Image (spheres, one colour):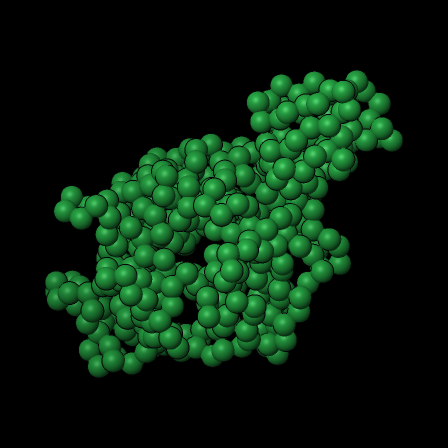
Length: 394
C-alpha cells in the first residue's frame, strides 16, 4: 500500500462504453480540478466483465460494483490504497438495471431485473443488503412497486428510490422510501413527471436529481413527517398489517421537489457534486453520439457552465463515484495518462524515448517495425514496454 495520507479527489469512471453496445471493464480516474484539463489515468480493470446495467456505490473510500447484463450475481470492491480488487460473496439473486446505496456500513441493492422461474426476467421487489463487516447477505424489506432503471440516494437512514420502470415497462413518477432501520418501505411522494434513467446524488443533507428530460431537481424532505410516518409503519408492521399503511400521514408526501436548472439533453450520463455545482458528464446524445463534454449547473442560481475540461473520450453507460486516490498512483507507473483514442496510429517519440524500439507482443497491437508505427486498441496498454508519454500520434 502507498502512502494514503497524500490523496487527490478524483472522479472514477468504471466500465461503460466508448463504442455503442461494446461494454468495457476499464477503471479510469480523472482528478477533479476546475483550473486544469482532465487527464485520464488507467487503474486495474474490473476482474470480471459486468456488461451494462450494473450498479456502483462507495463506502469509506472504496468502490463497490455489482450485477450487470453479463454477470448478474457478480459483486466486488475496489481498494484505491492498493489499486486492487476484492471479489466479494455473490448476490443471492442476480440483478441488472438496479441501484446500490451504502448506509452505515451496509450495501443495499434495490430494484432491477432478476431471473424468475415463470418469467425470464422481471422487476425485483426484494431489498437485498450486504454487511461490510460480516460479509453476509440478507434482506431488508420489499419495494411496494418493483422497478428497474430507477435512481437512488440516501439521507441519513433513508434511501429514496426515484421513478424507474414498473413491470409493464412504463416510466413512473413514484418516490419510494426505504427505512433501513425498520425495513419498512412507503410512498414518499412523486416526481414532477415519470422518470427513468435519472441520476441522483446526496451531499448528506440534500438529494439532487438529474433527469433524462434535462432537468435538475432538488428534493426537500419533511423530516418530522417522515419520522412520524415511519413510527406508524413500524407499529403496523409489528401487528403484521402490511407495508403501505401509516394512518392519516400516509396521504401526505414527505418529500417535494423544485427545479433548479437544466442541462444539454442526453441519456446514460454520469453526475457528481463539485462544491456548489452538480456536474453532468458524458452520456449519449439523441443522435447516438457518445459525448465527452462536462457541464456544471449551479444549485442555487441554476447558471449552466460548459467546462473547458473534457472526459478522456466520449463515454456512456458507466458507473461514476468520487474517491480520494493516492497521489503516487497519479504519477507512478501504475497509472497511465491516456492521450489516444480507438484506432489512433502512434509512434515512439524520439525526443523522449532513449531505449530500444518496444517489441509489442500483445495480440491487440500490430507493430509495423519498419517505421515504428503501431495501431492502438484503446485502452489495452499491458503489452507496452515503454510509458505512454513516450508515444505521439503518427
